[in-house]
Length: 246
Ligand code: ADP
Ligand code: MG
Image (cartoon, rainbow, N blue to C red; front, side, top):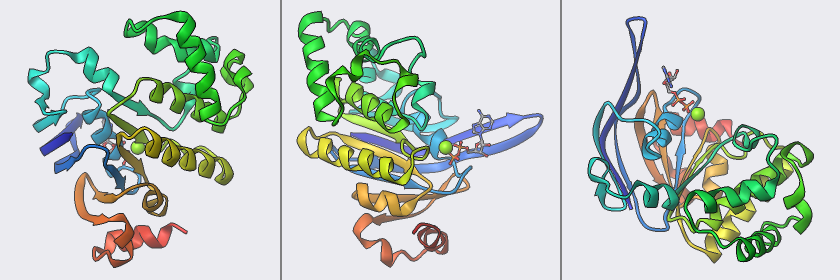
């Protein structure tokens, strides 16, 4: 579904060059759950932004849904099929937009509108993410971070994505809400399959929600391991991440 070949991204500031992503190659199959682990500054977010077409790689080849990114004709379809979720929902939801408007926004953007039936869908989706239906009339500051992330997840699922990119979506939540959101994600994935790439500094968390984990350090992949075999990791950096998570 996505293929990266020798992807590099360099940033140059004041004559100082950082290789944020350094010769990274991997692919993600349909409905596969892939984790990317690594400490802060290892290049995880840069890599996700490249896949999301928010940033251009300095070099390398990226194919999304079988198409080289330079020959993509229908960007609208790609943007609908590929959704992204970030750490801080308040940075994504405009403060003066109620949650119903936030949930309707992509329908309007993609011209999928049939207002009445869409509003019905949205209310049904509140149940699917374990929120009261009237949550849609609230404003972002009136609900908790964990509830907002469930609203964001509902909005993503409403677009019926093929691929979702998660950049530490639960890192700002307390342990209870973190588990609620991760359990919900697993439920949704089993009901309506989609592939995802989940970035986290917490390799233990990734083990619970992915099939395969890619470990990054200083922009490079140091190890790729099946999630259920994490105990058998051989690279010292992977082992140190396992020890740091508990
Ligand atoms: P992570 O998400 O793993 O913490 P990032 O992808 O955010 O890592 O950053 C990787 C490296 O690239 C870091 O050294 C960071 O400072 C640098 N970097 C990221 N974005 C930029 C940017 N826009 N300009 C300059 N340097 C950047
Ligand atoms: Mg990051």
